[in-house]
Length: 379
Image (tube, rainbow, N blue to C red):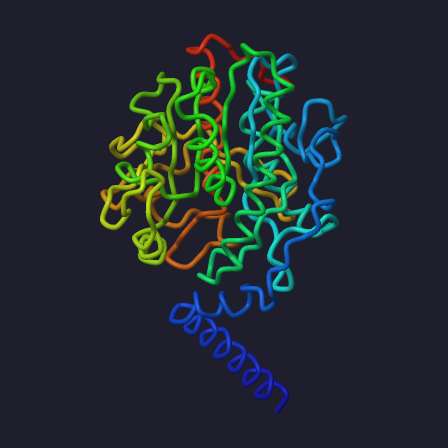
């Protein structure tokens, strides 16, 4: 009797799991929107609440901080002791609160996530660059799932913080120091706007080693002309832009593409039907053909609590498809957590190619005239 009851319980659990998975496949986006789009009005915070970036308080990574998560490296690597480049890194969304439109001044849970992103993403640049990453009042995740006017206001508030942090970052650099601009997801969105408004057509553009706007679609004809820099056409090119979005097979890119097609590009042209920039991180250039797994120098496999990880070389290939997405092949083992609908490996855009991103930044910095000064551990 007990055995039969136990089997019934197991069967019910299995049915619930299957039903939940089926509902997620059919209504995943609607469910996510219902759970994450804020249900409160947007209220502009008082001006006195704006973060002051002049000191270290509102930076999650900065060279003068005693420790920060961006200095982390997996076994076999070390940060550069005297980096000749500075990187301005804009973190992806780390706040998922439905009760607020922007990251608040004290948010331990969100800050924990942001530090995870510093280790898994920004750390790729510490072999050649000093990492600066502001704690800006980024828009909550739900702001990107709705067309409510409040969402645009939240994103504009976040961008205002980015501008303030960027001014402090620039003022702290010697006038001839090379600069890398990098970000992911929401960070890349703000970085694209920053490129258009603060870099394109200015002397600063001549100091840019490369721009990594990963995890956000960039239209080749509707966005790139406004940015003043081309897509990277070779692994040795400097002053160029890299971008990719990682999907496993079978990939469904329609959700991203549909949203993308509704927008107007930074050059004032409609994005609908335009080609999307896809840089193959294993080749260091746009629209490269399929690259074998042997070209992967190391994917960062996160540990259970995402506070670090191990590099696994020669495990994941890459191919830019005509759709503009980066095909990573069959779903890779060890990366199942946080995969988005459509086999979207958005969270892992950097970790899947961590060592190649690091090598890419060091190579371009070397061509630019600021060689890497990091050392590989021999421990």
